[in-house]
Length: 318
Image (cartoon, rainbow, N blue to C red; front, top):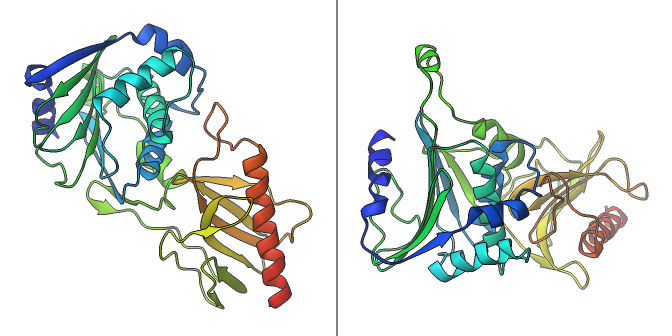
């Protein structure tokens, strides 16, 4: 991590083709309306950005000096990054979900008062850099995205947060200014369709126990312990595209919606069986300003109705 930190310290001297200065004072007022539950919640926005951009892997490496988050999703162009901050400053929505999530992640990470924040996106042919030092923020279009020590070769997006240097007292106690990112991931992101790695170790999917009956949404029914085997899709007339598992158990049920890789537990409707279970993967549902709850709009209601209809159908065939 120290070597990586030294490499990122050189970003200001990369061969750039153009620099775009970001006025964060304008964007900050708009982004501050997103009241994240804690500063470490910025990482959940990065999980959502990775999943909504088609990433298959998300690597998180944390050390005493900072944290590096990489994924192999869609590349963010210089124009898209410039447009993101222009839209935020104007109070408009970003053009794509993963850009909105990136903007929220940047604002959330700023609450940790990092010494430096760097976002890189690109490949060996071209790249984009966002550099934040204090209140100085710039976007650079560079000719070639440099290789980084310890960064997975297939990573197309890299988000690096360099923590503030700890005080002498903190150093004596072996403390750093890092956040509680790992507990946040384990609580809300272990069902992420793109695979998570923490310090190069795969993060396991939580055990779900035995179900009396379970139907996988590609049509396969079985009496077995649930096993998540992929992000399958079932398209319905009124609920968009989603995938997952529906079923019933002997104990109190639970409905989980995995929206762009982040877990939301929703209240089971009174018209549904109290022992019903649902784990549904979807994307693009709107969240409240805290990022902790899904907004109860028509898209959400359509999905809830589709889950209930699927459970009713399963019970009638059991």
